[in-house]
Image (tube, rainbow, N blue to C red; front, top):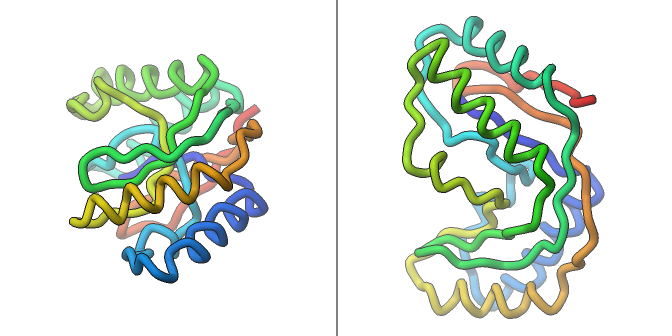
Length: 168
């Protein structure tokens, strides 16, 4: 199951266009760019009962508001290229509330990723870290440092379509 905050269509298009343009010579896999860009609010996990889990998540999200992210910047972590950003406290509160509630209600483990949560957007994964570093350098010159707001959260899984929840 996943829980993801979606970027606006306009910002999604802007970032993916910059990635495609800069990737012509590097030829990194664009598998992450074919889906809407998103911020994972919790690491993908296995659930026992989709409807029960979805309802728990819905209840958690109803306690929270939309959140802002600012100062996007490329960040390579191992063999991944992310867009890391500054964020307001609401995002951290949502993440913490999801972790604690899903663990208390359904024993969904809080793994190391969730304990060391770094809000980000995944752009590329590649074995060639030099290519990732080159892409990061190119994008850092072009990406805006503007702030953006996340209002739409998607809950879904491989077996189920996304359900969209709009934050207050």
